[in-house]
Image 1 (cartoon, rainbow, N blue to C red):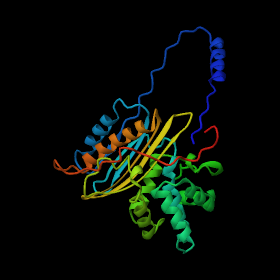
Image 2 (image 1 turned 135 degrees about the vertical axis):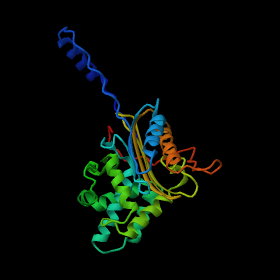
Image 3 (image 1 turned 180 degrees about the horizontal axis):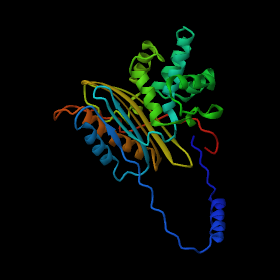
Image 4 (image 1 turned 90 degrees about the vertical axis):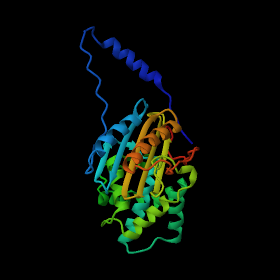
Length: 307
């Protein structure tokens, strides 16, 4: 269920009152701040410039606010846009919930219970909100914050009062998480990483949209998406993806808000993803590229009244 609030009368009255108090003094109008630009670096000659150009072109004339993170281990390539801007997480936080569950189990030297495995699978592969709420409540914010600290995700703030979908996250922290999931580290065990990737690789077809768009054949795809509409900033539409194959090992995070519809945000993300995959893994004509579902879906996120 989506909640909206409409209450512009007070704001209008305040604006009128403020206008009456402003003296008639002519002043220079400050120039609008320039929109942030895509920044890329790479160890491979020419790749950074190409990615910057093509990602920028993919965003041309698109409304909404977009944040992007790309990291490719094989070519030491990084691209960012609004990497520190905070967004409501929607269902993308479910990867963090699963990582926390596995991190905590490892600390206590235990395996996941049958119930936990069932909840985890539903949470990631079907984006099941009830399963997520059960795991979120079981873990509690203390453990979730403990994982975030261990993972270096210092700017991620868990949603209050059980509203995990309102966790505040940014591209930098989501890319840190995906790096932990895709390479050996001291935070997540190899078995935990494999388990997360396995479930992200089994997401139901209606939710396999976003960052996988345009991935070439031979590259494995793991994804977790999310969307949420609120009365401010419209639709948040996000996609996390990890990709491995054809000599590349890369992660993509795209977070968006201020979209008029869910579909509009999905298209923006997929335009960016297609540009990235094409530049990172160029292929000969006729090679099949990943085509996401034409009917993207997501589970509704638990949001508070007046959300």
